[in-house]
Image (cartoon, rainbow, N blue to C red; front, side, top):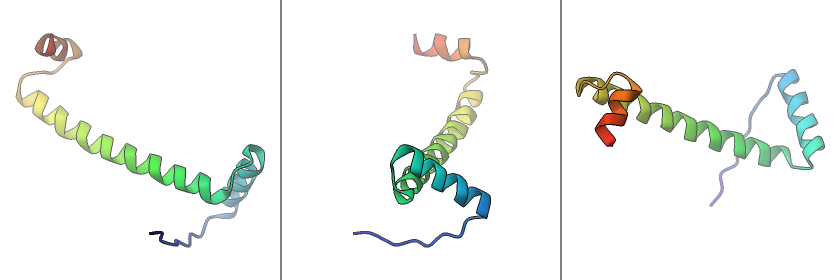
Length: 72
């Protein structure tokens, strides 16, 4: 199932997207889909990272060496 999404872009961003699509031979839609997918992955990663940092600090792990010692 697909959902159609209409997005309004500022002219400079729309022009850059068009240039990239032309240069790479890809559709603007494919570039936008890849960009949204990457953004969502990054957002999930940042959320998990924040949660793990809090847990690590509570466990007394402050530096990378602390983490390395705990998993070695």
